[in-house]
Length: 254
Image (tube, rainbow, N blue to C red):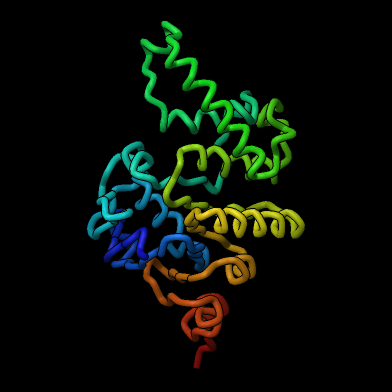
C-alpha cells in the first residue's frame, strides 16, 4: 500500500532547475533509498518534501493527505519526520531531554499548563520521559540517557537524532545522509538498526552517498541526476542500469 505519493515535483532556484518533474511512490513498511552524484538534487528533494523549500509544481501526499507547500510543523504533525545531513541536536541538553523535545510535537499542554504545572501537564511530561527512555533503548544508547549530547560519540549522536525524530511518532521517517562520517563498523550497526526499525513497522526513506549501504538495505532505490529521476526499482535492477553507471562513472567520449 502506498504511503507517500510524489508526483511531478519541480523546484528551481533562479535559472537552475534543482528538481524536474520527480515522481515516485514509497510503500508502507519499506525502506526507500535515494542516491545520486553530488548536486543531483537529493537534499533539495528532502527539503521540498518536509517544507523547508516550497516546491514550484507537483503533488505530495502522505497517507492521502496533501503536504504540498505546507509549513514544516504541519508536515511533521501529518507524520513525516526527518533528520539532517549536519547533526542538529541541542548539544547542552542530555540525550533524554533531546528526545523529550521531539515528543512535544505530540503533546497538548500549552504555556499555561506548563506554568501552572497541572496534573495533566505532569502526567504528559512523565509519559514523554518514559517514551523517550524507550526510544533511547530502541536505538541502543539508553546507557547515555543523562549524557549531554555534545559528549556523545559521532555515531551515537546520529542514533540520538533518529530517536528524537521517532519521538514525533512519524508514519514515515526521512534520513538525510545517516551514515555520513561513520566508519565501516558504525555503518553496519546503522544498517542493522534501520532493518530492525523496518521490522517494527516503520517506513523509512533515506538519502545516502554510500551506494553499497543503500543497495544492501533498501527495498526500492531511486536515482537522481541533475534534478531528474534516471532510474527506480529493485537494488539489482538499479545497479545494472546503464544510465546509473554513466551518472556515477561517466561515459567515454568519442
